Image (tube, rainbow, N blue to C red; front, side):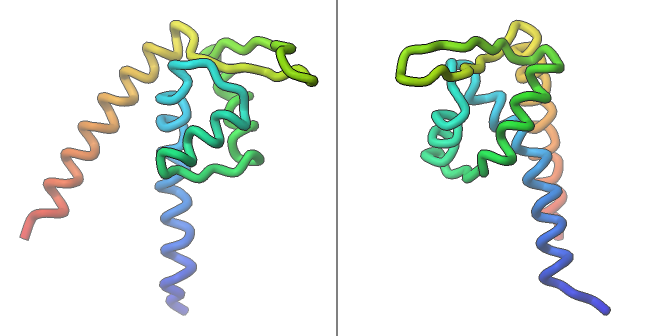
Length: 112
C-alpha cells in the first residue's frame, strides 16, 4: 500500500543526513564543544539532536577531519572540536560538490 507520509518521512531523513556533515563541518571553522555547536546550528535554522551530533563528531574526528582538545575552563571539562587541515580541504571540496549539485538539480526542477 502507498503510504505517502511514510515515504516522505524516510526521504526527508535521507536528504537531511547527507546535509548534516556539510553543515557541521561549516561551523567548525571556529572551535566548539558539542552543546555550543547544537546551539549555533539551531540559531541558523538547523535543529540537530545531541544523540545525532556526538556520533557524527566522533566519526569526523576519527577520520582526521577534526582536531579535538579537552579544556577545563568551567566546572567540568569539555571536549572542543575544530577543523583540521584535512577537514578544511574536505569542506572546500564538499562545498563545491554541494553547490554544483544544487545548481544542477535546481535547473532540473525548473524545467517544464
